Length: 401
Image 1: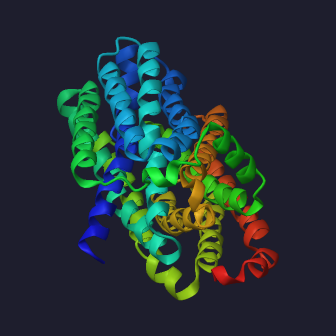
Image 2: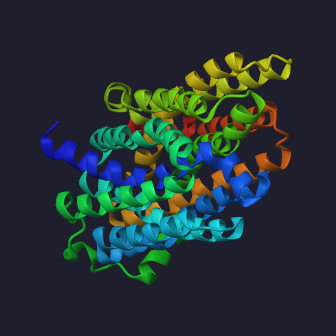
């Protein structure tokens, strides 16, 4: 890998990580935010949900804009909105004020989620794109590995408001990296045919592409299982199992290590076996582990040490699913990479938000509702894999193997 290849992966990974950093640092603070602002579990979880919703649905606008005006301008605007939302969240005096500024923060974070995927497609396809995407995710892994640990330390020493000042600093660093280390990958000559009309046409085309939608929702239900874990795990692990915020953060980070360590095998495995075969095997393995976890815990074996190994192995397999489905879905859509990335991101986050909301309806403080929702997401991903990449789909697109 060339130094330029690695530099691009680092910059794109850090730009992508800014938004999730605002989630993962904040997770250990959820119980203390509720106590400080006099809010119950549901309103506090709402501050997480609105972030997901705004970050997800804003991508539908940011993606086509990046096709029309280039990749860098939307990133600058997104980082500015993110910084404003972070400062407002740090100064919030009520749960309603926090929810409002978290919504603004999510709007800004959307650019960091959608544009880097389009940049990857601008530069590479196939195995090389999968390799770059996996490297991007390695850098992105700084968020779920270090952010909860950093967040718990900050919360215990400086209070939960300091988390938002910290992500403000991270966003300012991202502005510097964007200005100094990333060139525009969509030159003016490639933007000439991009307009609002072409964006709408692109969305209509993509919504009729069963292969694109199938692959997008395979990844979407995989991500949804992680979103369910994000929204419920702090309450389950801290309140139910009695872990301290710092121990919870270590537990959370271990699962993140499994996810991102496995994602680094993407390039090697896809080069040897093909993208589609890797997706099929990874999804089957991921679903098998998560359903087995539900089956064991439903019998009454709900110890943390029963649940932990299943989550570690299951999220490891998920680390192979996300980059491969993203690359496969966008492979045929280079001319509208921003639009395709936007629709993919929006559908991912919409699916995740729905899964979080449904799981929240059944949340009772015990691990079983969370585990049931995770397993359900895995089964839906498996069903879609069979429909999209079964024998018919594989035969129709044999060159992809």
